[in-house]
Image (cartoon, rainbow, N blue to C red; front, side, top):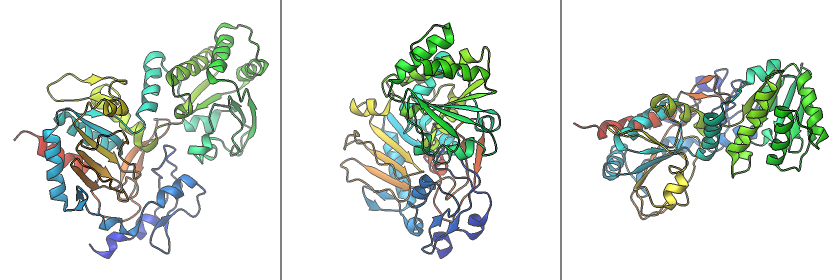
Length: 420
């Protein structure tokens, strides 16, 4: 392979701005630069998540070969073996699904030819958010609205900067007088505004139950801090509620989201407020939106040409399917990071891995095909939904490495599965 395909593209790295694909904030003000060892870096951006993600890429990625059962091979042979695995499967699972919109569209088409179930790496969080939306609806807000309008920001039971290091920088302007109140958690030290914490050790469900009773029914409650906060909300110009679904109690997280949304709805009878869920990592929002466009259902749906669509957020959970031995093949997609195969996957189940070029292949008994794929925003262009799902960001390649996209591989596999 020519040397130019193993090094960053000077024109791509110099292009401004570059959009980071590694978290759903999709920061679009970043300038990349090649390092002395021909890697990529963002020297002007203080984001540990971006730095860690870029460190997983190497100039040697262009030399990574497809593999069959751990042995290097060519792409045509890998595709042939992958096609055979899918042709012999009666109930395959397409898991991981960390890809962009084009990848999700192509995987959906392939799934329809195979009768496959689609579930994302962050399927549990998606299912909780989907269930709350389906059952109760939501008052959404956007990053732009928070930044331009909110004078009171309420962070519920999470530490945004832990997973989204630039959240406050992107959501709160330095030139505006904004108060941040952390409810059910300690103050996030990264908050760059006037901040305070109330009820940091109280169970989130207890806090929501009491607060809801006060906001919705006007009932007296024994928590003066929540009463005072409610008064502040009624006087604020705009209140933004920030929560992180993945950080809510694992059991019944959907109920916590519903309760928080009920509070936001009740507030909107007399004031203005909206909620922003910090979620959608690894293309989760993009995949969920794409599957919903194409099927009318969110992820955890089984699709097959000629058969009714079947959505079940409980039965089609990856861990449930694997622990019960209900699938006979796994197509695992991990284009943003080298995500390992699920630990609960039976060693004999055939697996196809469309993975990050630095993926370490496990030793397995069952047939295993690996195809290294491009990362959207690093090796190829693409599109991702931002955290507020109101913006679709266009991605540009940051280097010149000749790896196939997830969409290209899925399309070739779908072509091979179509009836002649």
